[in-house]
Image (cartoon, rainbow, N blue to C red; front, side, top):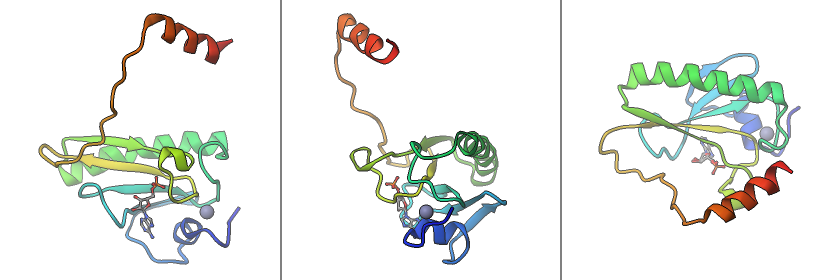
Amino acid sequence: MVDNNCIFCKIANGEIPSKTIYEDEEFRVILDLAPATKGHALILPKAHAKNLYELPEETAGKAMKLAKKMVITMTEKLGCDGFNLLQNNNEVAGQTVFHFHMHLIPRYENDNQHLEMKPTEVTQDELEAVRKQITE
Ligand code: AMP
Ligand code: ZN
């Protein structure tokens, strides 16, 4: 349930103080220490799971429901113009803390952040090959 070497376990369970903006039995939502924008927050389940691969399906569903609730409240309170949800799994994808978390990133006109992906070119045949690889 809890990993004694995991900083987010300690934060989620209140052993290490954090700027908490929401808490219930299963989750804590905290402000990120190095925010991409004003209000950048992290949804942390209290039970340890390394990332989405390990997260129980039920917790994944609840995390997304909570994200929706937080986005609505935070948009109202912060007056932001949009939101990015971001969730990294494994080092190659940019995960640096190995306790599942979902980033809630409020976006503001002219906030000077660039979370955009770099598009690549692909043929219809290549797309079809990938589609087959995933579905067959
Ligand atoms: P990721 O790269 O998806 O693993 O994101 C880890 C995030 O956790 C980064 O945005 C960090 O700024 C944030 N972070 C790391 N340690 C803390 C902490 N003690 N309190 C709040 N946020 C943290
Ligand atoms: Zn943990």
